[in-house]
Image (cartoon, rainbow, N blue to C red):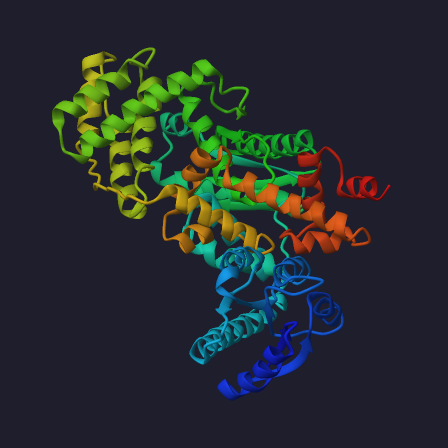
Length: 538
């Protein structure tokens, strides 16, 4: 049995719906009749109702204002608006406040029955999900941790289906992934030095796993959570946060030096790492990861065995790295097309970056372009890994006479071992409409666990396309827009409800952790939420 609150200043409409709704579906029971929005809010402050059906034009408080208030105070409340044809534009606006449907007056029994059926289906679905979440809340601490780690890995690897399925679970279970200024740290073995010392390529995976285990042991002794995962290329990736940006940077440095010193002293292994710039939202972790990867790709021009940051990624290094990346991309296309002429042209371009044609440089640049091609595969990584290992083996075993022609012949023979499938993507959509739809969805659901993947799925487009569209049309990222919406609504709650506790506001605007919300608020407004609230009341 599901309960219904009816809100309308016309007694005739209230009496009609009170009789008609149970006749249309006996699973619905009318629990309360209210003549205006103020009376409805007063009743809701002490009771609950599965569904609110409200007229849009009423004295004292309109149905539109009631919808906005209910959205702020009870984000999951289901509502249906009753409107005349002249009120249609207001009914559309109410959708931004979480109203699920609207019925035109005079009310059609067919439309009423359909709306009730759809609402019952939605409530039944949420009931099943709620029961599932209840089981999740009883999950062991280790189970919660594994769930969070799977989500972090999905974000870093941009595994969209997993992001979509896991994020609501992480949010509902109130797992706080960030506690302030976050950074990403990515470890990378200096493979050219290891292979030059005679280490078999088959042992690389073993040492990569050792790094992962060492970081896990370190993270267990930390006060704030440290999330450690392996990316799709078996690199150890660390997500951590601290109260300040300097503190998070220092934590990254400390972890790197502990691991690097241990590997060097015990096994003479050389290890590099890259740290991202600070960020505040978990969905910025993929960009932070890309930044770390870009820095590590530039280490071909830098000193190995180093803790790299954006300071090391100078404009000169960035330019050289971008040019080399372009040459590798051209080689990837040539190998994909089995075009021998273009393969030679691309490899000749790569050779211009080598300061000399001795074995250390051959290993360093040869590994760079082989791994560069390998990372362009989105699928079938295990299959491509084998052929890349064959190319690397050929690189380490080959003899050259330290001349350009000899190195070019070696690189060409390696390129012939590789084969890459083609891929394409195309589409044409009304982009202004998409941005409007995305904004409306965010405004209606900002208190829920939102992700770029979820919104893109609602719009029927890819997350990457929506992300670039947001940047181009809005002049800011999706994360910044969502953060602004949440902070603006938090401030509205402070103004309209001066006595509301900060932890209550946090939950109503879509955050899990008070500490994380406070950090983001301070970054946005220059002061803590409590300070801001205090100024509003003074």
